[in-house]
Each structure stands twice: as structure tokens, then as C-alpha cells.
Length: 369
Ligand SMILES: *Cc1c(COP(=O)(O)O)cnc(C)c1O
Image (cartoon, rainbow, N blue to C red):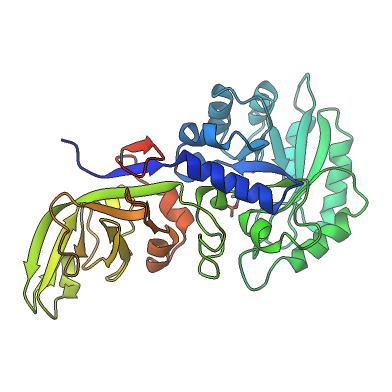
């Protein structure tokens, strides 16, 4: 029998979350962001559920090829554009739209031989200081691009640094608005947090929204809002089973480094899931887990293949009982991925993306495994 750990990808949750984002931005077209292999879910596993989007956005050329191989003929956007000149050949061949964020990419385009001109998204660095043209260089870049026979329509984009936080997006919106006021072309600004938190701010819900994380049922601004606050559903569940039981006496310790010491008699469950499965080693004592759909806590350090959980108040839990590390239990209860992520000092994005290749994945809505 294989090790009992398993991940589930839930099509109905993906469809629900997509519809939820549509509802937040009813007039916008939607890029479903599927970079990082659909945030760890697997592009092929989410494709059918997300094809109600208007296009797919990603940044790896192999992933773009995979989307085309699945039969998608609609728009595909490379969020970081070409990494080297010959990437433009694939853009021509697969009809990929691509971001242009620096001068070198314009140079490469100007030397690129193509039958069909490319649709490009010109990116402004409106304050995040990652990719994009500085505001005072943006119009020059636009003019240069606009003069190239290799270029078809030019859309305008930027990305927010604080859509999920205190500082918000107004400072970047103001810069973007001022510089692009009289430029033609479609606009693309909002990620999940911008769409869910700032949809009422003029200009945010532009021609194309670009949600990623909310599609996968993690709150983009945890802990300010939970997944449930945003009416999202988990699209990935990581479940395993109890493979051992221990009885502790007061003073007994658990696991490597004796990080946990029992102050009373305790019943402990040993779960077949460890950091080699993608469960964060940084999850401390007390991190939440579900056993048979009921909340309990991690005790002791996460090891490579196992974690240990407190069963003292769960007398019915036994060898083989189901443990949900994140997502939905087979009985329907939900542990948002944001909770173990927060316990580990990180975000749901990182946990999804780090699901280890050794974990078998099935695509299933069924609440009964
Ligand atoms: C990843 C990414 C997104 C999606 O962000 P979420 O926070 O997951 O919604 C949107 N735009 C760009 C440019 C990105 O890189």
C-alpha cells in the first residue's frame, strides 16, 4: 500500500472562485494566472476548470507550450516577456502575447522576423521597483514600440506592491494614471488583492484583471480577511492519515530536539506528512490541523516524513484516521491554507507552490476520498 498522503485538486472550488472574481469585476476580462504550474496545482489539472477565463497568464515558456498543447487557442500572456531574443520565435509560433518591461526587449523585437505582429503589454514600474519602465521613460518606450512593424496593439500594465496592505494602491494608480492619460490601449492592473479589496477605486478594475491566488482559494490579504470573508473555497487539500499512536506521561518530550514537553498525560498521533511533502518545517507547536475534520494542533518539530499531533481530546481518532494539513477534509470541514502558512510565518502561496512531487495528486470534488 502506498504511503497514505494525498493531495486533491477541487474543480468545483476553482470554478466557484473564478465566478467570485467575475462577480467582483463583472466588466473586466480575466487573465487566470497559472504561473508556477498553476500555483503548484498542475496546469493540466486546473485547465478545464479555469478555461472560463479569457486568457492564461504565466511566465515560463514551457508552461505556455503546455497551455497550447491542451488546446487553448485564446490569449496567453507571458508576464515577464522574453528572457532572450529567441523566445520571440516561440511567441510568434504559439501566438503568445508578451510583456515588455525593458529596453533590451524592445531591441530584440526590433530585430525579430515575424509574419504576424505581436500583441504586447508595456509594463510601467509605478513604484514596486521590480519589472517595468520608470514613469519618465514609459512614453518613450511606447513611442519606440509603436513604430515597430513587429508590434500590433500595445496594452498598458503595472503591478501593485501593497494591494493587500496598509499603504494601498493610490500612490501607484496616480502615477500610472498621469503618465498614461492620453495613451490608447487596454489596461491591466489588478491582482487578486486589488480586485477584491479595491474594486470600487476608479481605474483598478481595468480591461484585464490578473487574479492568481484567489482562484486557488487563499485569501490575498490574510489575516485582514480570511478565505471565508472573501467567499472563496480551497482548491487544494493535503490529506494524510495517522500511522502511529503514542501515549505520553508528564515530562515526556516529542520529536527532534525535544521541542515539546508534555505537562500532562497525552495521546499523540503520528501523521504521514513531513517537510519532504511540502509541509513547512517552520510550523511550530500549536499549528492547526484537522483530524477526522476536527481541529487540533501540531506538537513537536516537523520532520522529513512525519508530524505529530495532539489526540488527547479526540478519543475516536485512531490508526488510519484522516488528517487534513490544509484544505477540505473528506467530511467537509475546511482548514484554510492561510492558517498553517501564517503559523510558519509565510503565505498560502508558498505552501501551494511547494507541494512536493512525491505527493500523489488527484482531481476530485468528492468530499469523501
Ligand atoms: C503573480 C502575478 C499576478 C497574480 O497575483 P495574485 O496575488 O496571485 O493574484 C498578477 N500579475 C502579475 C504581474 C503577477 O506576477
